[in-house]
Length: 151
Image 1: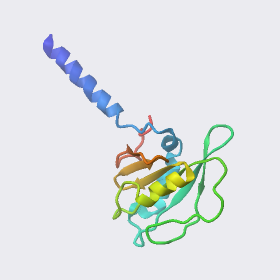
Image 2: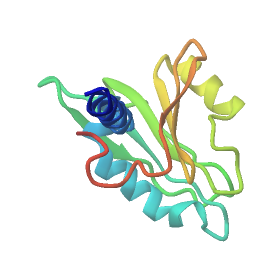
Image 3: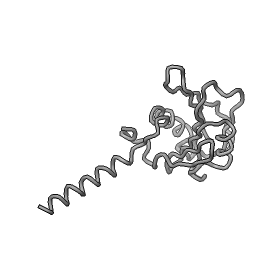
C-alpha cells in the first residue's frame, strides 16, 4: 500500500511542477502572437545588426488588449518611438538580441518608471518584466512560445 501512495504522491508533484511552468501574466497570454511576431521580426534575437522590435500594449475601453507596433528604427540594440504615447497604454514589449542580457536593462527600468507602465523584454532565454517601481520578474522561460504556455 505504501508503494502506491508514494507513486501517487510523486505523480501529483510532477503534475504540479508541469502546471507551474505555464505563463500566468495575462498581458503576455492575451498578446502571445504579438510577442512571437516581434521576436520573429528580430530574427529571434540573432539579427546581424542586433535590431530590436517593440510595441505598445493598450487596454481598450472594452477591457481587452490591443497593440501598436513601433516603426522599425533599424538602430543597433535599441528601438525608438517618436510621437505621443498611445492613450491607455499599459505596457511596452520589446526584444533583446541574444548577445544582450536577458533581463531588462537600466534604460528599460528608467522607461518603465518614466511612463508608469510595465515593460516586457523578450530574449532567447525567456520573457522578463520590470514594473514602474523597478521590480524585475522572469515571466517565462525559453519555451514561452510553445503551445499550451498560457493554459
